[in-house]
Length: 172
Image (tube, rainbow, N blue to C red; front, side):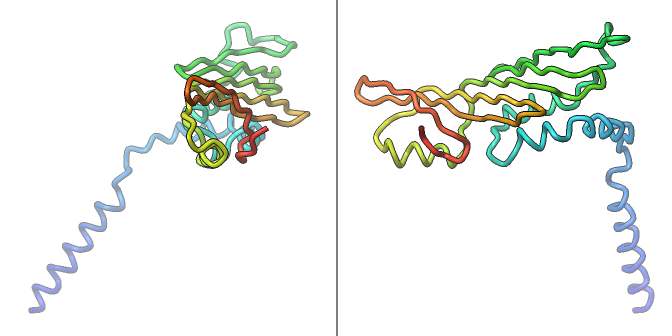
């Protein structure tokens, strides 16, 4: 009985040992990118939240982590640098200073998934209407703040109407 108990304990410890090492191939060089996040942490905090569509978050993260020093003409640049990022759903035009901080960003996306608050707001106010097109726009300025809104085209019986909605679901 004693041998069985000792065998079970050793087998259990062995399996725990393997479980502790399941991520042994982690690439620690990925942590170097955290320094780049520090420069643009304010941007991500300002533009992203739980309501931000995933298609938009992907491109915003690229904007945040891009390193100005990778640009060939980086050396000695004094004026801001404008960079355009494109995806299937839209684009972001970001302006960086020479240290890599984002000064401004303009975002425009089409045919994206709407946040639940926005969808519910439309369904309550226009119950029999169908959503036809969606657009998302954001304007970020490091010194002046951020403005976000959705434009949604709805239709019913041959009629079409554009709605302007803020991220909290308020239709204007």
